[in-house]
Length: 248
Image (cartoon, rainbow, N blue to C red; front, top):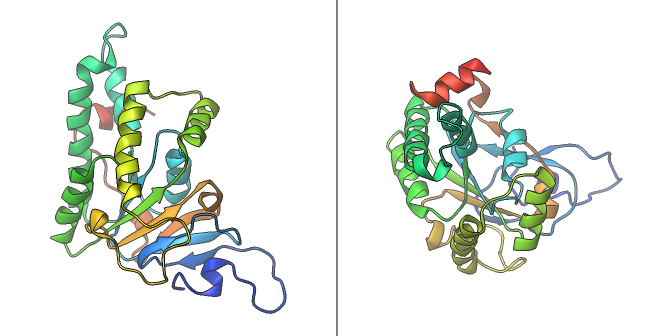
């Protein structure tokens, strides 16, 4: 495996040009890849790692998670939303049973982290308590939490929502935007991160933080885990999410 500063990880040319190919990148500390172009790469993590992917609605989290999930299962609140919606009357607004859906989401996270294998988490980035809880719970098993943070502008995120044909409400988008801006505002500006810098205190619960934008996000091919996460799949606990997944 290559560290983030190696030519294979960064796409830096050495000698004759070679055809683009995916190289492994093992994040350490704070890794700023915003604005960087080059070869595609694989994000490589230790055995049993919990990888949280955060960003605004429409920032590309689901697309990125789809590529990463070739290596480990992903817990996505959208799946919980759809599963709960499927068993509720069509006339009942989601806001009425949103608390139930959130409980089901946390139950799924708890079951997944207890299973012991690596997994991915779709997150808005505005709930630090969730990352801290996951970090503590995984830490008791000798595992670490890693963060991938998508830094895109609100306009880019809204364009992403338009492209996917699904919109977050104005209130929800504003809440996530404010939470994510608070977090990003306490991190270094693009290009100001020296190699090997420790993770800043606002995200001290993470063993590593990878910062991506719309350019570098597209370079990520998939993820890899030292213990082959594809074999470490845990189903959600008994309830609407498991039933919905079983019926697919």
